[in-house]
Image (cartoon, rainbow, N blue to C red):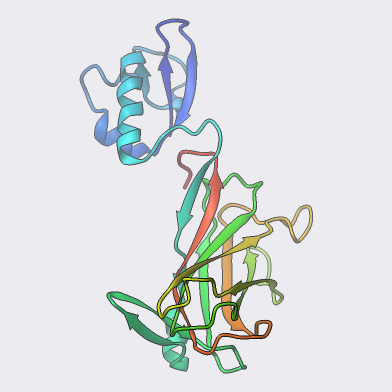
Length: 246
C-alpha cells in the first residue's frame, strides 16, 4: 500500500511504503486518516495522511519495527529445514546441550550426514547485494587449540518457468579452535557469502525465487578436531531497501 502525506510546509506529496494491515489497524477514523474526498488525486494511491498523522505513523512503525528505509537495512530469516529427509535417513542425530538442541555432524562420507534448507527470497531484499548465511555451531567435546573443522554450504536458486538446476555453488569455511574457546559446547559462528550474480548477467538471484541449501561438514586441514560439531542454527541475512513487499 502506498501512503502519501501532505506537508504543511510545502504542500508536497512524499511516498512511504508500509503494509496495508498496519494502516488499517492503527489509523482508523478521527484526524489520523484523511479521506479521498479531502485529497482528490488518483484514488489508486490509497489512504492519505496529513503532517500530524505522519508523525503518529512514523512513531508507530518504530514501535513495531517497521520504518521507512532511506538507505539499506537488514533482514534476518531462518530457512525451513527438511525434517522429512532427516526422519527418512535417521541422521544427523539430534543432541541436547542444556536447553538447546542441535544436530551432531561428523565429517560427511556419502552417509546422509547432511542438512537441507529452503527459503523464498524476500521481496524486501535490495536485489543487488550478496546474501549471507550465518551458521551457529558448537564443539561436541573439548578440543585442542589450533585443531580445525570445516563446513560446506552448497546452494542454488530456482524460479517458476525454468527447470530446477542440478548443479550447486559450493562455499567452504574452515575454522580453527581458538584459545579459551576449546571447551565442550563452546560456540562458533561461520559466515557463508552467497554471490547473488555468480551465474552471470540475466541469471542473478531475484526476489521471490526459491533458494535451497545443503550443509555438510567436510574434511578440514590437519589437525582435525576429534569430536563431532553440533549445528545449532542457520540464519540467512539480506540487505533490504523496502519497508514491505510481499
